[in-house]
Structures are given as C-alpha cells and as structure tokens.
Length: 494
Image 1 (cartoon, rainbow, N blue to C red):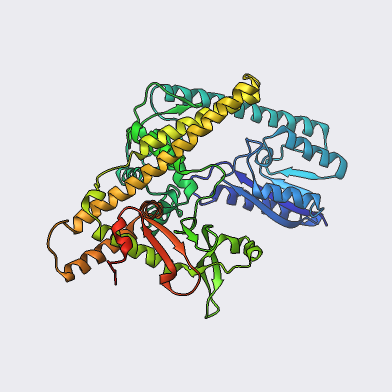
Image 2 (cartoon, rainbow, N blue to C red):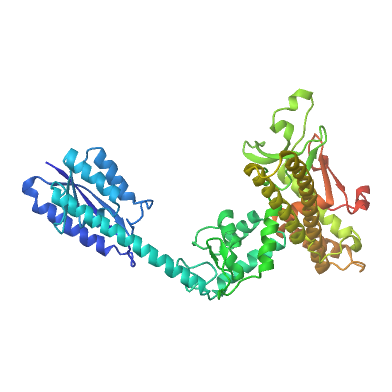
C-alpha cells in the first residue's frame, strides 16, 4: 500500500486563521479517500502557512521536513493543490522530476494538471514553473522601482512599521518616540547599553517586537539614521525626507561616538562593579569576580586576586586576598557618599557633561583613520615604512584620545553626582547630626540609582582600592584621590 504525503501552502495568510490551507487539506483528504481501493494511506500532512516559495533562500520548515521524509523512503506519493504550491523554483522542480523518473515518485495535483510520469506532463510543469518564476522576478523589479520612486520623493519604502513611527513611517507614535528620546538622553548622560537594557526591562517598556530588550536590539534602535529624519537607500542618505525626526543629527552622532568610545577593541566589558578597580595588596594585581562557596555551601560572588583566578599565585608562595563582593561594594559605597558629604563644594563644580561627546567623537575619528590606513596596507596603496610610521602615530593618538574619553566620563559622573548633592545638601549651612544622617542616606539612595558605568566612573575618579588578606571590611584599604582630607580617617560613616 503506497503511503501518501499531503503538502499544503499559501504565501500570505492575512488573518492567521489558516482557512486557505484548511480548504486544501480537506480536498486532499477527500482525494485520498477516493483512492482507498488503490490502497492509498495517508502518511503525514505538511503545512507551510503564510510562507512564500518565490525565493530560494526562504526557509519552508514543513517542505524541508517532507523532503527529508521522502529521502528516508517514508512515502511514494505527494498530493498538493497545485504545482506552484509545491514549488516556484525550477531547480526544485527538476529534483522532483528526477525522483519521478528514477524512483517512481508520483505527484498528484488536485486540479489534475500535473502528471510527471509523462513527458507532456513534465513539459507542462516546467513551463508553468518557469512562467511563475518569471512573473515573480518581474514583480520584484516593479516593486524595487516603485520603492526607489517612493524614497526619492522623500517618503520611506513600505515595510514593517518602524519603532517610533506610525504605519506610514512618517508620523511619530509619541509613546514610542519618547522611549527613543529617553534612550538617547541616557546614552548622552553616560549610561551603558547594559544598564539601559536592564532599566527598560525592569520598567517593562515595550520593545520593537514586544519581547525583552537586548543590547543588540537597543543598538539597532540607536543606530538608525531615520531617528534624525534621514532616509537611507543603498547606503546613501537621500536628499529629501519628510520623515518626522525623533532626535537631532548632532544627538545621534554624539550617541554613536559615545558608544564607540566606551567600546575598547579586544576587551570585554566588565560585568561586576569593582572588577579591575580594586587591587591586591600582596602583588598589586587587580581583583576579578568569581563565584565561590560560602560557609553555608552556597555559591556567592567574591572579588579575588587575578593571580588566584589564573592559578599563578602559588608560584610566589604567598596568600592573596579574597573578599565577598557585598562587603567590598558596601564599603566603597560608604566612601563615595563620604566624599560628597564632607568634601568642599569647590571640588565638585557639578553641571558638567565632562565633554564626553566631544572626546568620543575625537576617538572615533582616530579609529576611522586607523581603519583607512589598514585598508591601504591591505590594498598595497601605501609603502610599508610609511604605513608603519603612520600607524605608530595614530596609535599614540588613539591612546591619548581614549585617556581623554576616560577623563571626560569621570568628570561627567562627578558633575552629575555633585548636582544631586546640591539637591539634598547646601554646603556651608549649619546642620544637626540628624540632618547629616538624613543627607548621607539620601546620597546613598542617589548613588544606588546611578547606572553601572556611571558608578564605575565615579569610583575611578574618587578612590583607590587595595584589599589586604584577612577578614572583615576593614581589610579593604580605600584612599581618597579627590577629597584627600578624608584619608586621615577623622570622618566615620556609621
């Protein structure tokens, strides 16, 4: 008894109710029933709903599964509504024709047009698929020309609704546009993408696909030239655009430069607040983060000398420090708060963006010049000696520009926190002990609200952290680099 496979497909199901493929299924099952006397037995139904067969690279999951099942010998008859439901690709049709000629595969269409066992049927099938393929190509050319005309007139080509705009791609959807503005504002203020992703997901802000935000998805939104009203066609900005912008071109370029400035090629961003900022008192290496078992047997985050992480500490025969992450981070928090609580106001002028955008733009420019020289070396359009000298100079510029970005980020973080300080505490006023305690608590809350990278920038600016061996929080030796008067330990934060 021959096993029968039923293949169902429709290119576009606008309602999602699968009515068309259900009609195909009912008619196919009736045909199989009509051949009960011939021993036909249904093996499986393969259904690709709302899936086009016009492009070779387009995946059709059930079609691929059907091909695999046929190659495994699980059926010998295919029932489909029409040949163009099965395929619109001449190469795929030829594979089925070869199977019909060499292996006895039978393809039955519900409209009775195809019989691949006969040369006339094969000729008809080839003509039909070739005509369908030609029409698809003509439709594609017409659509491409129409899209080019639309973009040239200043309007975006039709497609998926862009996040931040209505379906026309021109008019702002204010609720989403406000999200995009807030993302740019946060980047310009120094927030990292990681911190932004965390914040957006905690606040359950809808993403473009209504799924959780990711750094990749966030970059896709930030990178769009459309955000400042530009239309791009084949990588070229079109001279006319009626798209309503969300941000200015300067804001867009500054955000791009800041993100590029934070990224250091070949180096992964830190995931833990004090990784690389705290140092080992024994060997001077930085501390990294590692999960270790505590007294209860549970794994908890610790900061550990990197010599222990890399297993090189045994070579010097010394004991290197390990400290629970919560203990060290709490101690550092207290010292940051102490600096702003007791430090003179002139040390923290505030209201300063630190020049992060300008420094980041300079860094991005240097890196682009490095890329151009590298391309020239690869193309052989620059002499090796000249290229080496040029690269050496550019790398020195890059180091200086990166240092300027780091300094600017630190100034921005300090300035922002100084503004917060003035909001809760007026320098020079006489305050009671209770007021000091209240201000300290308020500064602690504001510190907690800072983004991950903003905290790291603030800590790098204000403190040097060295961890001794032993136990307890006091083995963390914290030195103030800005409010140096605090190093005499006359101020205690309880």
